[in-house]
Length: 494
Ligand code: NAP
Image (tube, rainbow, N blue to C red; front, side, top):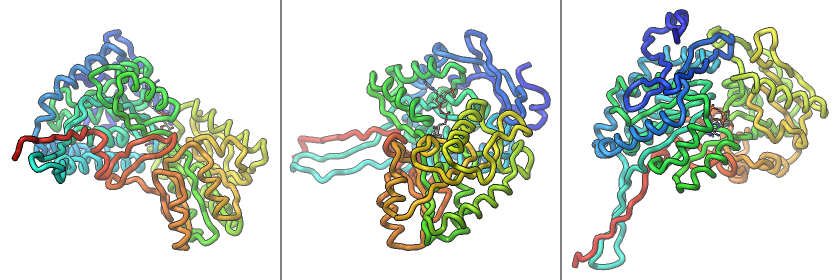
């Protein structure tokens, strides 16, 4: 049996749980008959055997999306909005089951999972409205007998490749605007977290979104599936969220057919605390930004840069707060820090921390795997005495570890913050209005949190610069990624 009985019994709507890919409105097995196991990262429990699709099924999904495109692009905006709103409502109605699936396969605490379900749903709701606002322009003419216009048309079939750290929101941020613009989509979720993606597909089916408009291919061989998605002539756009090295590879693959791309890649967020900051607010912002999802977010504070005058007070207070954080299984409602996604993640975090300590840093709290809880837990950690020459300063940690560095001047803080090829999120705390403007403008990042540790919302543009990617998700700009602007020149009007 592919699904364990204990797993099923937790769900109000077990029909949300699927182990097959969703192609052209149908649930399909792999031609090869292959399966792979989905594991609960918290307990190591085997959750389900997932069918393992590859190139053949991905080609079929693209063919289905291409066939559905002709009708979907003609659906009136009001009707598209109605279907998206229905999908949104079903996600809301099933939020507990979706959050359960997320905690099971991804590990984040149940309350956080519920938060992500609502956050993910908000993109569908937002873009349902945007579907009705895809205006073109009438351009003042350059000649008496001509009139000039622009119209916005769907890009076509979109491929979406998404990561495991936000198994629902990273999909809805792409599917919402793609569908609203009149595109159809083939989604390849991470092989760590396909259950949430397939549950979203089930709900889109229940909402009445036509066959072929949304397709989800689940397979262990990301390279094989990725090769098809990036080389197929019918795929006109790739929207990728994941690591910078994979993003670079996919960009090069897309170059062969000159596809449109949106790249939401890795980060190395600075979190700067100036002497004039509200200390309590800065500590709470640091907790929210750093330890959410056990530090596994692209916008997590990765480097805490603290001015000399407030360094000791900040590190003491932060360490005391981190000491209070409870680590364990996400279904325990006292737990704030769940497991890391896999053993490779534990090894990477351990190496970065050990190397920092060997080179002179000190762990005020934590500093090692929480072995007593299982193989994939890491103690919430605060490191002081970190310096710019340590690898932890330059690499995305993706774990519950806050490295603290001391600086003297504002110029030094900005130089340290910008000393990275990444440019996704950044944060700083100050109560000086002139400094707030200076620093906001000097930070080379796509997003700046000012006296705020959480910036993500569907109403604002999310995205990075430099090697953190290109394109924006959410907000009034998000739909632009899925449309072509066509220029119409009408002559002979005299
Ligand atoms: P990843 O290893 O780059 O994987 C992301 C997705 O790409 C997964 O679906 C993965 O499949 C797939 N993939 C991997 N290699 C591929 C290849 N050669 N061809 C085609 N697809 C391939 O990243 P991750 O570890 O899942 O996610 C963490 C990273 O995502 C971090 O760097 C984080 O900063 C970034 N991220 C960025 C944002 C943003 O908005 N900027 C948001 C969230 C996360 P499998 O998982 O099945 O191997």
